[in-house]
Image (tube, rainbow, N blue to C red; front, side, top):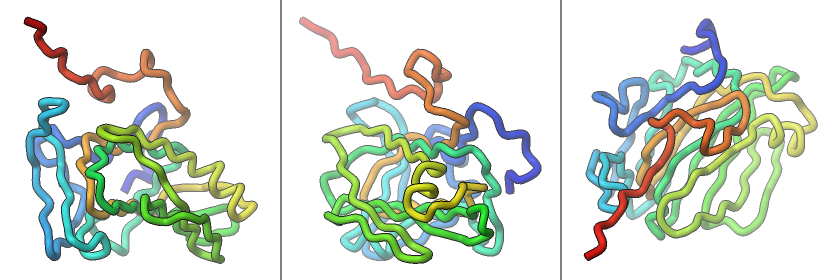
Length: 191
């Protein structure tokens, strides 16, 4: 999808405020919902994924399972709200040995397990909104001793609220981020 696109800085694959946030995504819903709602904490539209079973409600990009994202930027950043329920996400990459590998992070797993094609790891989320920064190059090197080439696919499961999902060439400080990439909490009136 993005293989022939110039990739530098930021590359957004989901923005909840956009006119069609799931344009390049496909979704699966069972025992729950995927819908755009207004989050009261940030007073903005967000995408909510909710289900009684995290395995059966998710979104994935690209929508066509035969296609590849082809994103070479090594940092995956997700602005996600902790719903205080089970949540997991998965990223499939291609490494320099031409092997497809998956990294799966969840808030219900307690240990890291590295298998030949899947690495699952625990993730801790703070209450409220979180910025998850996932260094795909570092994970590939540490888990498999290989070099990250590109991201093939991203899959986000219930239960969470999503503001934005994007890739970047490096980690940026809050001051360096474009305005649309920042999560700002509204100022409450004092009376």
